[in-house]
Length: 439
Image 1 (cartoon, rainbow, N blue to C red):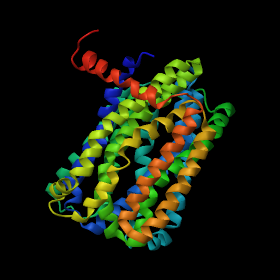
Image 2 (cartoon, rainbow, N blue to C red):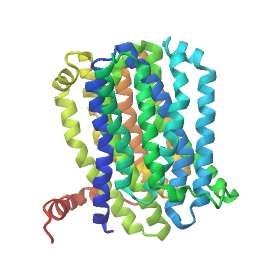
Image 3 (tube, rainbow, N blue to C red):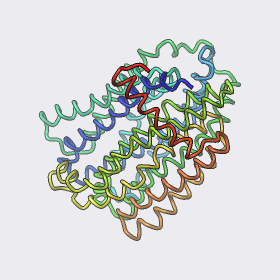
Image 4 (spheres, rainbow, N blue to C red):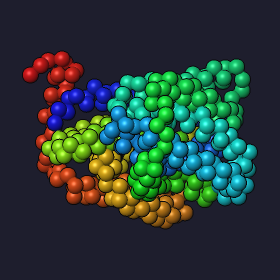
């Protein structure tokens, strides 16, 4: 496999996924330091509900669209139309359901402001809708540079807007922050539609075949996403219900650091799904093996500095970033260091299964993830509170990562020895891509 042809795209993908990291740092400096702790907790609740709905809708409709679009770009119009229809139906139905049950949800989550704040959810969904579809279209064509610029509008625009707003007005509420997010998501959607406008010509219409393909594959990918989103969001809602908004804010002051983990996982997903889809459709098993082993090795090597930083520099990092606030979060960050080495392997295995078309395996992996996460959180959060949520997340990563690797090995016979032998590719990359020296 000519792995080098993916390196440049990988660098653009890494740059794209650094944007949320930059956003997270700016968010700490501009928001978390100054926003009242309860308001920060309210923002986290609304944002995580939005991200949960969007993530599930993307898994159900847009992940299948990505796979089938990448396999046959020339005849993609029915797939785009069907994927967009299912995506709109899912997020629309979910949003209406949340609004109808806003009062009991606010009571369960210990937030008096929630029933009013959640009325901003429809605007969040509408503002991000075209952006989400545009990003999938660009990802399917491996136009990672264009993905970067669409994301940059939001992830650079939001901190800039927050900074300007905080200089003009007193920045003290979750609602202000949500409205800024809506505005930058909308501008990002405009840019995405302009770049991908040729694919928005849906003259071919929706076909039954396209809808069946999206539905059949999407039901399995939805199961997988429920698992991953349970791990990513269930801790938020359980902490809010058991411990209240102040403890939720404390926990999320550390969870911001996990954007680095998300960046690695999303870079892998951005490249692995379309690459494995194309290789498997050609029957190129040798390239698939090389892709899996090299991706795991490169990703794990990239995580070692994060593991060391979070484990040994947690206290000075928290003290510096928050100016003495949230010092109780130091041991939580140290716990969050533990899953770092497993993140790339888990991401490679999960996304490769999707690219290979093993939707059933992904579905059962998702069900196992739901059960593992819920059991870990339900046992540990009532027992040790915020630290229990962190331990639950760490335990779940290793349990689910091991299961995902076992499932993938049944399809692609990668080995630990084979993965470790890929270290030479790092030296080749540095010599040819960084130092610009040929063989």
